[in-house]
Every structure is written in structure tokens, then in C-alpha cells.
Amino acid sequence: MNTAVASPNTAYDRLLVTVGAWMLALMWILPLAYAVWTAFHPAEFETRFDLFAPLTLENFSKAWVQAPFARYFLNTTILVLMILSVQIVLATFAAYAFALYDFPGKNILFGLVLVQLMIMPDILLVENYTTMRQLGLVDTILAIGLPYMGSAFAIFLLRQTFMTIPKELNEVARIEGANTLTLLRRVYVPLAKPTYLAFGLVSVSAHWNNFIWPLIITNSVETRPLTVGLSIFSAADSGVEWSVINAATLMTSGPLLIAFLLFQRQFVQSFMRAGIK
Amino acid sequence: MKHRWIYAWLMLLPAMTLLVTFTHYPAIRTIINSFWSTGRGRRQSEFVGLGNYERMLGDDVFWQVLWNNLLYAAITIPLSIAIAISMALFVHRKIPGIGFLRMSYFTPTVLPLIAVANIWLFFYTPGFGLIDQIRSFFGLAQQNWMGQPETALYTMMAVTIWKEAGFFMIFYLAALQTIPPSLYEAAAIEAAPRWTVFRRITFPLLMPTTLFVSVNAVINAFRMIDHIFVMTGGGPNNATSLLLFYIYEVAFRQWDTAYGATLTVVMLLILSLLAIGQFFFLDRKVHYR
Image (cartoon, rainbow over all chains, first blue to last red; front, side, top):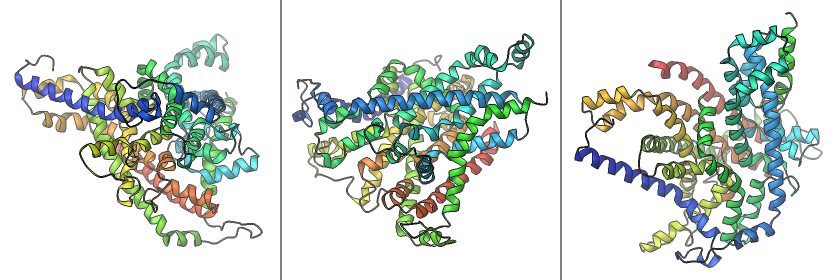
């Protein structure tokens, strides 16, 4: 397209596209910008737009002391790290088995794994709650994470990646006397790094944001993750000021948001990689 | 070499155990439990055959939430996809302010749906939120968008589209990069109008992406209901209640787990149909190139 002569027509066309793109972008950022505005200004400027309104962090400190957000942050951090590390270890072994071994029942087992891509634990609330009660795990951080630790998505992604690694590497290493663990550590895991990164970002953001299952399975400050804590804090009848609620909202999404702004490209590429394979 | 398959099984065992315990086993239990009654106190759970299903068919709320959910999917999915394609077309080539544009489109995707709900709740608040402020600027009356049964579900849809379009955009961005420029050059020689180029080249070649995105969007339309909790609680009068939200209410507020299981079976049925449809559709329709 860059060979086209810039006739008045295409210049006009360009302008139209640019204006359209910007209008959509402004519309899209507006709700967030509004929340940022109220969070950083005193409550009386919630609905009054004055360019010279004083900036303040007071709303954030108010939110921080009005609810145990420090504890919620800790819970969420423990939760996402725990889920991610178990997911990665288990999925690595499973994916390796699916990619490199032939064994009876392989296709059936892989089919069973794929089922979870459609039917996720998210919708099996009733039965999973019963299971957790039988295991005596209700209201523990472990219970929030357990249903997600065997991740079909991770197994699938890693299997696809492992299958692209030439099998010759495997044979050479075997001849040199490397066992499976060494092989995984030295060859397969390092070569699949982009896939791990992609899955890691997707998993962390998914579980940082997860809400319904944690809402059901937790009922104390010691276990509640940020999302559930935020929903309780901002429940309509709590009578908290909007500016404080908005500050709390930004605070809970803050780490992900900042990480995203810093590593925008990796985020987008990871989401893309995770989706396309 | 005979013992190799034992290795494979051992490697699979931990992951498979968790998968089966929290996906397959509960799915099967759900189906079994839908034929039993909820045990309460001293009254034991007993086999009721299709009793729960009869109750469901006569349950007006069930039909309403199912209808809500279908309407919700039917409106949010095409709109999100259309917006996602426009976004991708906007930013896949050089354009002034491309960094800001991409960021604006994609940022909602990173936020927790609960946070998104708070932001929009404030946006919608009657008399106070930004929408009403803009309306009052033009001399229009206050509107309680979330409080009226006629408009409430649409306010939820707006939130969903806002959150999802940017996510879908990145898949289209990737797909657009794979379309050979020679096709566009040929179209330019023919002086084909923009819309024709889109309809005859871009859109058909984006079809595999559209299908992939649609399947994800359908799953999300039934699964992502966090904002309902914060914004409307399913009200007014179940106008914004979706299937999974109703399951939550039945199972965890009324503690009628058997009926909750019966409703979950409907959910399983919908997702299975989607899986089967995708399986047959994906191979046929998409790889016609």
C-alpha cells in the first residue's frame, strides 16, 4: 500500500481512519480515566471537573486502612504463585509424556484433557464445593487454587511446543546418558521458555482476577483474595465514598496494570501465543 | 522398552488426578445429583427421577435467565467481534499515536472484571455518574439505567463488550499480519473500493480467527458473570440474571444443591454442543483456503 500515490482521496481517507481510531480510543479509555480522576482528587471533585483541582493520595490511604487490603494482597500473591508453580510442574511432565511417549490409552487420556478447555471448574461450583467440604479444605487458600492446578491449557500449550522440538536432540542426549529429568531441565524447558512466559502471564492474570469460586469457598479475611475483598468493600450498602472505592479498585488492579504498562509487548504477544496454538 | 509406558503414566498421574477430581468427576456427579432431591436436615436425599427437570421446565425464572443469557451472547459477541476487527484494522499499520491507541483498546482486558464493574457502576450511577452528567449537560432527565428492567441487561452488555473487544483485537492483529500484501496490491490495481477489499479479502481470510474468537466468546458469555454480582445482583426482577448467576443463587443462597445441579446440567449441555459444533465446524468451514 505504501506505493500508492497520496492523492487527495487517500489523504482524506487517512484522516477519516485516524479520527475514527482516536474517537474509539478516547471512548474506550474514558471509564478508566474517570475512575483515575476521582481516585486522585478529593471527594468534592468527584463530579466537578476542574483542571486545577488539587491532587491527593488520601483516597488510597483511606481505602488501605478501612479494609485489610494488605492481607488480601498477600492472599492473592500466595494464591497466584502457588497455582502457577504447581500448574507448570505438573503440566511439564504431562506434556512431555504426551509429546514423546507412546502408551496405551494415550488418545483417550489426551481427549480427557481437552474436555477441560470447554468445561472448566468455574461452572462446576456445586460439586467442587462438596468435594472441598469432604476434604476439609473449605476456607483455605489451597481450596481456591486446587481445582485449577491441573491445567489442560498448560498441558496443551506445552505439548504443542515440545512436539516442535526435534526428536534427534532427545536421542543424542539419551546416548550420552542423560535421563529424562536432565533432558527436561537442559533441553525441553529452556527451549519452551516463551511458552512458559506466555502461559505464566495468562495464568497469573486469570487467577488474580478470578472471583466466583473464591467468593464461594472463602469466608474469612485470612483467605479472601483481592477481588472478593474489593467486592465486599465496595458493596453498595457500605456507605463508602466513591472516590475511596475507585482508589481501592485501582489499587487492586494496580500491580497487573503497572506490569502491563511496562511490559505491554510481552503481554500482547503472550496472550496471542497462548490463544493461537 | 516395555516399561516405558509406565513412565508415561507416572508422569501423567499427578496432573490427571487433579483434572479428573475437579473437572470430570464433578461433571458426572452433577448429572447424577440432578436425579436426586436435596437432602435437608433429617430428610435424606432421595431419588426423584426427572422431578428436578420437570420443576425446571416449569420454572419461569429458569426460562428468563436462559433467554437473558442467549440474548446477552447474541448481542455481545457480534458487537465485540466487529469492534475488535475495527480496532485491529486501525492499529495494524502506522497511524499517529499508535502506542496510545493500542493501550486504550487493550487495557480493559487486564483489569479484573470486579474492578471493571466498580468503574462502570460509578459511570452509570443515576444523577451522579458521567453518563447522566453528560445528559444533564444537554438538558436531559436523569435515568436509572441499571434499575429499569428494559435497559438493565444492556448496561451489562456494554461492560462485557468494553472488556472483551480489546482482548479479541490481539488475535485479529496476529491474523492480519499473515495476510499476504500481494492480495492488497492486486486489489489496488483493480481500484477496488475499501469495503469490497474488506468483504472479499480481509474478512474471509480472518474467518479462522473469527471462529476461534467466537467459541471463546460463547464460553465467556456463560462463564464470566462477576460484574452481575457487583452491579445489579441479578435484578431488577431477574432482568440481568444469567444462567451461572442463577445457579449460584439456587445452590449457595437457597442451598438447593440438587436443583443447582440440574441447572448446571443445562450449562454442561450448552458447552458440549459448542464443543461438538466446533469439532465438526473447524475442520470443514475454516480451512477452505
